[in-house]
Amino acid sequence: MPVASPPRIAVLPSAVADQIAAGEVVERPASVVKELIENALDADATSIELAIEEGGRQLIRVSDDGCGMPRDDAVLSLERHATSKIRTAHDLVGVRSFGFRGEALAAICSVSHLELETAPDDGVGTIVRAAGGVVLEVGEAARRRGTTVKVSRLFYNAPARLKFLRGARSEWRAILDVVGAMALTRRDVRVALTHDGKAVLTLPAAPRLRDRLAAVYGTAFAGRLLDVDDVSGTTHVAGLLERPADVGTATRRVFVSVNQRAVRDQGLVRAAEAAYRSTIPSGVRPTMFLEIVVAADSVDVNVHPAKAEVRFRDRWQIERAVETAVRRALGTFDAGATFGRPAWLPPGLAPAPAATPPVVDLDALASPTSPTEDGLFEAEEADDASSDVPPLTQLHRTYMMFEHDQGVVLIDQHSAHERVLYEQFLRTLEGGEQPSQRLLFPMTLHLGPAEADAFEQHRELFEQLGFEIEGFGGHTLLVRAVPMPHPRFDAERCLRETLATLTGDRESGAHARHERLAATVACKAAIKAGDLLAPGEMRALFVALRDTTLPAHDVHGRATIVHLTWDEIERRFGRR
Ligand SMILES: Nc1ncnc2c1ncn2[C@@H]1O[C@H](COP(=O)(O)OP(=O)(O)OP(=O)(O)O)[C@@H](O)[C@H]1O
Ligand SMILES: [Mg+2]
Picture: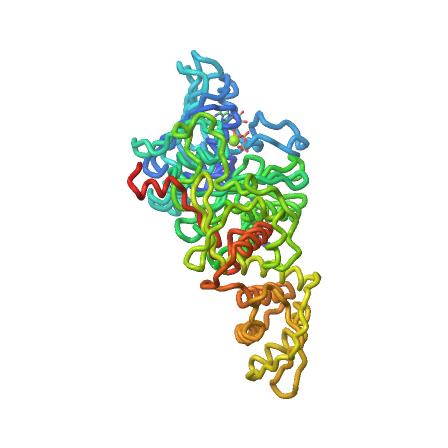
């Protein structure tokens, strides 16, 4: 008779099940810190104090001045699926609290020694001691309104997890990240953090992101960032960005929040990065602090065990909004390189009305004008359009300079013109009109085989740009008409150099090819360093540059505009 094999499936005791579930929520000390902070925020705390020992392996203590809990709730809060935040599945849609699963305290408690002290009002409160998910003791504790959760000996009963913990230093760094992200998202809350008894962060409530960043990373760092603030439809994108000229010079920091929840979202980061295209060299990545606010029902926060990711109903729309917002921020004169302390000052140092004037308010100098239709250097007569242009001086036959109330601005004439032509050519390639000029005597060009090949590859695009070219047998071209970006345009040289650069270019996407050709021709066609500019030419260039989408950056990712603040100049002269 076959022996019945013993049953192989058994329902796990709940303590074991809790430990397994805990693995999802509580990966490392930083996850405990995150959950406890979120609970404090959900309790409407205005002040959160954290004490960490040995990277959280020994002790994590989080105290808040929030609503606290009455005795029964305090005991219940350690049970799985005990939550005060939602009642039905329906409440999950558009949930505004951080917590909603009723998992966190139970999960933490199942793998540690936990002490919960809480009081809904100043006076007598409750203390609950538990270990490994079992409540050991419930008593009275005199304390102020609020809650303190003390977690010690994390993973003492989960050796497999303990083994995967990193050293105290790296666990501490992960905790710092979590606390930093929280401090940036919830600036209305005071935060104090100590590690092994030493005060690490003491952050008073600071409504402005820049002020919080200054408190966390220093005023120099915060002062250099560029404001972004833009609304597309129902999406609001605000925050601070690294100026393209600074990208790659310091540690990269990325922070993104959605509806006041810090999230990891590569899609949003990539959208912001895409907006930097053509302002920074490829391969370097910008620092960004972005706060995105969308309609509560257009985002699902219940898709990740640690709530670090969210799902959007219409992701494309939100990524577009981010890209547009960043692009607009980079498209200001303000986005140029700045030397010296910018206009922004931390609170306390700033004079009474602490408004943030832009570093250079060109709009105040210049009323908006429609894009100049005329060629760059013909605008000389059209003086009414440029009467709002500050007096410009040419320096070293290379830079245009002007002063304003906050300092001196230098504009690189070649880079600036390159930016102007690049955008103009790109518009032409994407369907616009390019006036071209017939040559009295057609120009003959003899090309090498690779250049001839490059020409064949791009023939149509050249024609769109305003070149009229015929093959003339072999590798000889007959050029009958050329675009006329400015009177000093050397068409032959431009064509030769462009073809030499395009040799071997087989880039596939139409837009990428357009960008590359526009950039190459713009670079070759632009006025050079060393060209003497007449005052009218400088004004025309200034006006044309102001009308581009990214005036402060050339097409290779270099700055076209440099600000030198009076502050910096005075410092150099020892005046302060
Ligand atoms: N610091 C606190 N102050 C006041 N009440 C708290 C605090 N921490 C926890 N609670 C109460 O205990 C309950 C359980 O907390 P827990 O973190 O386990 O679950 P949750 O926050 O509801 O959901 P989640 O598992 O998603 O975090 C909460 O719903 C809340 O009512
Ligand atoms: Mg919670």
